[in-house]
Length: 454
Image (cartoon, rainbow, N blue to C red):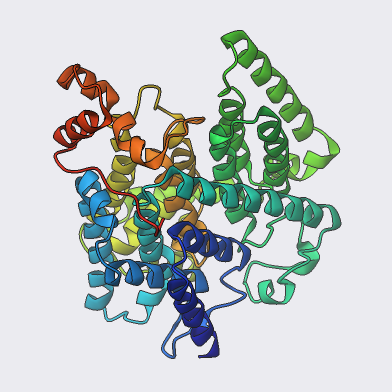
């Protein structure tokens, strides 16, 4: 209980100091990435939570109690997507209560519910500066994890959390050959770095973007994830070509980046992933078996079999491994209806910014969420006790960001977001006051005011 007291005290300190939302979210994200689930949990007596989850829930509570919550504006903006997400969250909880699996509610909170709350808090931040600060922390964490993973891969030693990792059934120190940083598995590291690669579209400096691209790519190679390498490589080429150069200049950069990537994969450093492509130790066959089983299995439409039940397929000998797909596992655990609603809500959140965003807002802000969803289709991810759930919803949260390079004062952001509509509604507006009134007419309400909480 001392751990719980510590994290509650830290949250109380942040509240007393009127800490900004960006500081809370940055700390929660850093704690989730730097502390694997197997290493540390906050004991609640009848179960446990990851400390990052405690911070997220405390921030949500502080926002509700502290007065008018800016999250309400975000809920109104994307009400359909959030209604769908709320139905998923409620359905997950009710299914566990119906099956009498009350203790699993904390595990669900860690893996699914708290990440959803993080997304809402992140997207309701009205300041581009706030979300930019969290982005900076994410990119720095990606660089740190890449460096650590490369060292782990080179010396064949986890360096940190070795004693904790040995409690995992799949972990073996003598057979440690894949870097995983401080994440719970090499595949979790791959997911995190692929998201970081996609976030490079927000980096204005070409020098920094190129340096981080090389570092993240090395980290993905060290993880030994084949699907992560494919998806991350595609995202990397997009990020490299997202600068302000001419089309010819961008094509040259993409060609050079692609050549460097191929040479790196086929160098001595890429031997690990080369061996996995040559001999995947039944990994691909396991995924095909899982697909064939799910396509022919009698999966319950409404309720599913309860959180974690998909792992019984391995323990009972039905499959050689789990379903190897977080969304398929979610469907098996909670039913087809909630599984479809989960995908629809995430897709809606990715796409709903298209109709509100400024001209030029297309793939770049949505790239991180898109690649995160794709990678989660390739392994257990958010259906495990890991950072994958938070990484997934964090990546989706960037779907409403302004295009890379856009920097607007907080009070002007609402006007800029709808300036194309203003032109058709009131071309005579000349003063900021008139623009603001026109903005209210477009939004159907007053734009959000600035808040010190962000």
